Length: 226
Length: 246
Image (cartoon, rainbow over the protein chains, first blue to last red):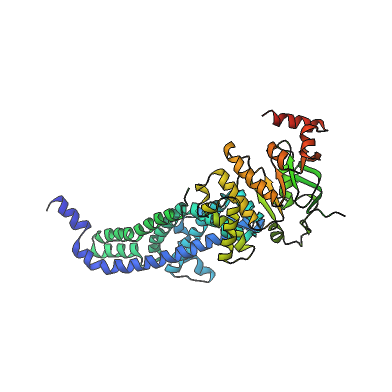
């Protein structure tokens, strides 16, 4: 057997791959569910915090900044572990799935709040003044003039963040979430063969490449003619 | 008692320790065009921005078209509809077309439906000579055209007073004329206008009154000829001399 054949036999073993394909596919479903939940709740909460912050209520802003800085500095794995293993001592006992979802949603919330906030503050004061001078209220100005411009600026950093945090769903393995990596590594130990891991890698590419492409499309769509 | 459409009294404005307006009175009659000139830092822009409360005066009273602008009970958004403002840097919304810029407040503030707002918006663009540019975004327009769209955005709301804050200062010289032309047309239609600008030729031809400000105070005011030819204060004379040397 040549070196190449050995390599293929080890990493791309057709028999092993076929056997564990259903496991990987079910892992993909779990990952998609987790990812969608994290994106919707994380970005939603991040935007909500940025909007609250724009009201410029001092004590509230200190609280927002504290929460945001906390979740940006803690490693996501630590948050997941604390929530899954620590929270039950205080009462609620979230499942591994819920712990992973909420932990990563908090992290995405924190990072996206900062990105949305940077977008909002980067809009020149003159835009606010022009809008307010025609009689639009603070809220109308925020939603019609400032946010549409801010969103356009936030799309590239936001998609990068979203993708990197969503890939963190792999951390769910430590709290027994049967997402892609969890399925792949248990298949790997059962088959004594790393081929399932390669399938897992392929599954991540299949999942996230369209997201990257979609992000590019959104960026192009939101770029206004100069 | 004569009724002034703009009646500002004893306006003081502090920015921290900086005393920018030191008790300014400004009364403007209906259909009057008042030019405000003065060295940079004299407080003329701040005064203008106090009139529609983009800046909050530290003290004083401002009544515009019978509305007490500084009364906390005044609906400031409603009051601002009657006071158009044009900025040095145009401040058009870059994510909208010219028509979108003009119709936003018509729809959101004046409560017009889309069709009516667009008809009014196109009419306003027509008045500034840009009907055929309605679907262009600000980035596709020259500075002069952008400023005219900004004027259309204000006049579409049928304001009672228009404030111009150095409307031509950011424009290339060859584009200034088209903006002044639109302002002249507005004046002829009877619009009350307060203009902060150094376009002396325009002031001479079009202004009813020129107000000279220095160091947070109105130093003197009068008809353009009087201020430009025979200013009575030394500071006015020095300032007029400086800008006419250019």
